[in-house]
Length: 208
Image (cartoon, rainbow, N blue to C red; front, side, top):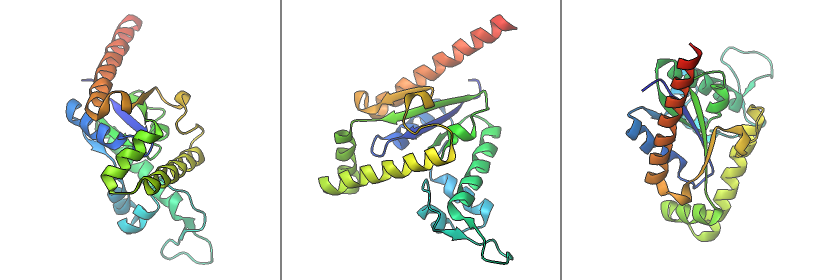
């Protein structure tokens, strides 16, 4: 299989992470999600737990002071995390095919010819039901969580990129996971990606 860099944006509760992990198993390539926080911690020198609190969020109130820096100026920790994660994503992408969940990876890798960007959505009622079951929440709490996390992800993506989170035009493919389920969506993505690569290879052959 030719090198492929799959990025998955996702609504909260749509199963995007589970789909990415299953797709990685089907394609036999690594899938990176929360591992990016640990790798970013190692790169930035900031404690992993602190970075996790600010993952895929924007907040000008939280500042990180670089060691040895003088004065009252500092770098917002969210910016430090975004830059560290972007570097980690680029380094992993250079090594070979892989899947990235969130973190504006489609924007970070936008100039890479191997990029295939996907957005996973699902009706709100389905996502609420999934969060209720997974996190053992009440319907009201799950609804609040879905809307809160989606808002955070939208704000984060729109802040760091020149695109709009969740809009079809921002991605190469948008899929409603409620139509096929986790396994079915992963299998669909595998078929689409394989077909896409065959078409790209055919075009390259014609143009060579």
